[in-house]
Length: 83
Image (cartoon, rainbow, N blue to C red; front, top):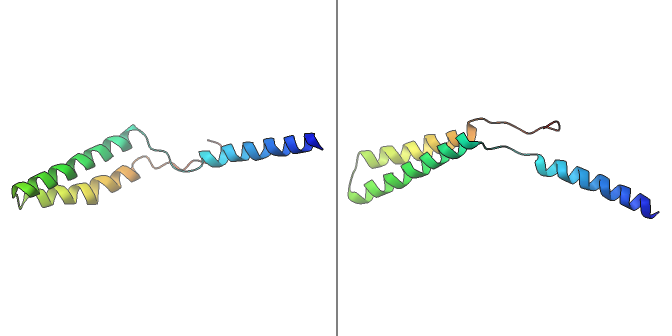
């Protein structure tokens, strides 16, 4: 009876390990694009505070609409059961 519980516990643990590995992977390129997007957004707000009405909105749109989503989509790899 006790061995059946241990075996059942092992199976649940192994399944739990596989469940924690499911999801999406971010690589160094993703983090670099996120960093560039964050820096672009910060620079956009700094320029906005300085009174720039042309460069600031451009940088904010570039950061929010292009770089951050691009950081999510680059190298999109869904982990499967074999990974």
